[in-house]
Length: 101
Length: 223
Image: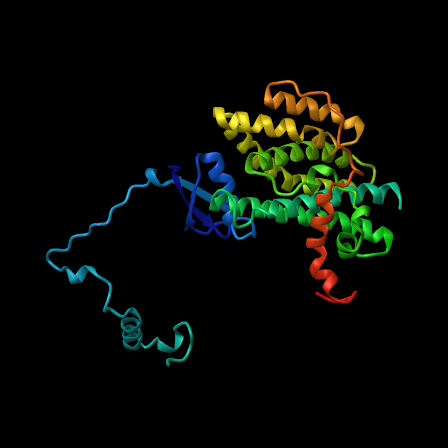
């Protein structure tokens, strides 16, 4: 069975590499040619990273036995809190976007 | 027709026919990744053919499409190597590698041409062909790495060798022989080349298929 290489592509210089998919290939040379043709032939990438799937470490368990809600960010509207703070400070009009909604 | 257009059409026809022949693997290549890669290489070859036809068309006062599709089968100048219908995989790889090796020698000569347009297109083509050569080379290395692969590749190369010599003019053939022998690590036989100008029956068959859609519409149709 041929190994699987995970492919990450960078769309423009300076941008983060993002997972694009994978190629199955007998070795690195084949993998590079296949990744180039699959993820680069339409000029959609400026760089590719190839990583053997076996070389990746995965963690997938994140216990939260005591429901420490205060560490989560969901249910907390930054937008609303920001508006509140600006109102208090009287700087609402100066905020990005100009007039308040 | 000048020597210049003659040369341009010979190479353009090679690239067009090889592109079509290689695309016969689309959908049925040995595995998915290879299917995508080999089809992409086939598309590249057609792109090279278009660039060369455009140069010839400018001189002849016609268009790339007319040169690619409106000539009679007997007027095509492609080497017999690229006329052969889809071969089994080891032979496909042998043809691919032999063609790319010959093409590299031809492009090296064209890149130093006094004709700036030809030298320019040759340099552009060569930058893409470099990846075709890498693809061909990785398969040759792969086949040579096992006993069965090695036997199949050698058999295929022996069969196609007279055709491979036919891609190049007389003076460039010894260089092809030198490079091929060096890579395979064995001598190749002295054989009579199957040269340009020979038309295999398979050329007319492919022409029928290739020009079918275009012939079905009145001439001058816009696509």
